[in-house]
Image (cartoon, rainbow, N blue to C red):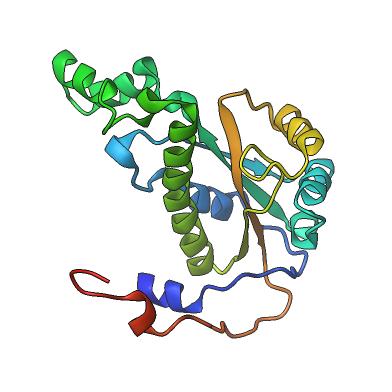
Length: 212
């Protein structure tokens, strides 16, 4: 059940070295592909990385986080701002069965298409959408017995931690100037199974009815 995966999921940073099969990796990626998105725009790309040199670079760009270097596979979750373009967004809407007038209404609407408000707004909304796919993949990983750690602290256009690393990553992953690495999922079989510790705020601090 989904709730079991939610309850048992934890950030795993130490791995056994066992290889994740392509079949299992594909199931995790498929969970991300099937995630919901705003007007079904799907503004994401997922890049599975096994190459050690690339993992080393991503580790350095993430402040030296060791789990990025030692994971069996990394999934680089990329926000693709060009997904909001009239051509690509329009194609998705056409596949949904919308006629030309309806498609034009959506792609031209500041409410429905954030790119009409500028690239920064499109980036913010794209990041929001990518987080849905990230959540789906983390839960799929848990269900499939794969440890997962979400790494968001990395050099990119959001953090501006190190523009040199950000540029190297764009080159290594073949990203264009409309594509932003948002999150890295470090995947591997857990070295030693430990129970999840859910240190969460009390429900009374975060759950409300009607208003705060």
